[in-house]
Image (tube, rainbow, N blue to C red; front, side):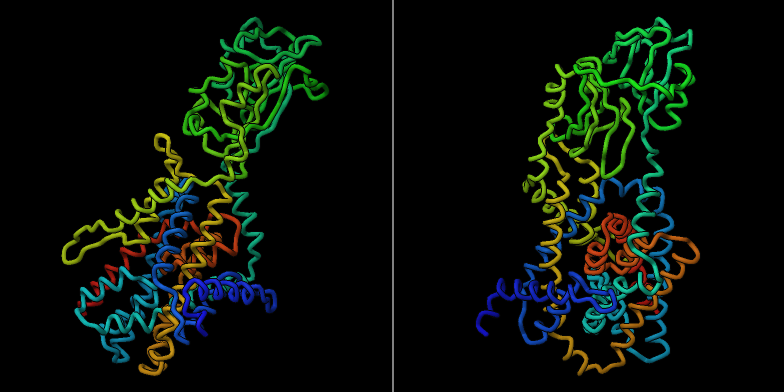
Amino acid sequence: MELLTNSYFALLLIILIGFIVGRIKIKGISLDVSAVIFVALVFGHYGIQIPKDFQYFGLVLFIFTIGIQAGPSFFESFKENGRELGVLATILIFSASIITFCVYYFFGIDKSLAIGLLNGALTSTPGLAAAIDATGSPLASIGYGIGYPFGVIGVILFVSFLPKILRVNLLKEEEKYKNDLKAGYPEIIRKYFIVENENVIGKSLGELNIRFMTKAVISRVMQGDKVIVPTKDLVFQKGDLIRAVGTESALERVQILIGSEEKEREIPKDPQFDVRSVLVTNKDVVKNTLGELNIFNTYGATITRIRRSGINISPSPSTKLQFGDKLIIACGKANMGHVSRIFGDDDRKLSNTDFLPIAAGIILGVLVGKLSVNMGDFSFSLGLTGGILFVALVLGRTGKTGPIMWTMTGAGNQLLRQLGLLFFLAAVGTNAGSSLVETFLEYGMELFLYGILITIIPMLITTIAARYFMNINLLTLLGTLTGSMTSTPGLATVDNMVDTDAPAIAYATVYPIAMVLLIIAVQILSLF
């Protein structure tokens, strides 16, 4: 069919059929977006090819958006879980290397062919480059070609069916992960207190510096029957009723400082007083601390809490603002308009996507990936995927450089990630499908079976170690497996299975570790 010779038509047709197939459920299991790669394998077998430019374009978009999203929490996660995840990556690479050694030592497979098979089974192009350099044999490329198709398909199938095999409900795992995450951010609550402490009476709010001493915020005060907007000049009188907002521990400190808790009365809302949620969309205030903005002293406005990525954060003068933060602000109505304009409060900007930082970030990532570090007899570079991922993580963590905002809105990130993923899967699938049957006919079933063993057994071993010895959350395990297998299609599959960035963070953590370990393994295997 002539239309199929048009790459754009073939690409969209593969995506269309892939989505239709992906929505078919058998006993509650569906391939979802990963069905695109299986449809592409069939198209590739019949000679229909998607140009590699689509593959690389899709790859850079997908990896960059993953890194930008994971960046803000990646480095904290690395500090907390980096050692554990590094151990899991080591287990996977070590077990894959042992199986490879057994394949050529006990079953008589050519060493260069087996080393290529290892890198194909782990879908590692940097590993293949190291294998070709170490062995000097074209058999490494042939082995890579044999192991690669199932290396792609096997990881996708493994991570897709693993929750069912382990009988784990992904929704419950997501809930558990989010609850654990929230545990680091205690619930923000409000309580009322009566001014009774003689050391407080007659002193102003500014003199007491309550926010610094207790980590809580005074959002409302009532003296007699009069509701007062708290300002730094407000002087406390005996019997005043105050409303404080903060964590349980912060409010306990307020009680010690101010006086007993009042459970019967509440402070009514003053007609001249306003409480509103305000979005941070003004790039000029991003990365500024609340102390630097000084809206309390200037406008008598109090930020009682910050909503960020679904978590309530107790504000402090050192809290740095991020684009898209939702602030709960208590302020006099006369000043609320001024305060809102300071932060932007324009939800239309949340749906805008600036392509300048996207293009600049990807180009920077490509350049970083080209950098090579000599390590004795071999050199190491992050490569295209590693370079872009590293730069995106750093930029996502940085958030803003001068006038450039590196972070993206959730909707924009999701759209570009999905687009990149579809392009990538379609191109990878047609490329692998073009030689799948021919390779099988030429080398027989034996080498394919060895490749399957090198792909599946290390993931099984790592899963057992993670779940039964290290008690790793399944979401983190899925990201660790795809990162250790250096499998971008695997990560893409997991990313579409869950609604959290836990797999992406784990993937980003172990990917460079796995890449270095695999290159070292190739060098060691070539010496035997």
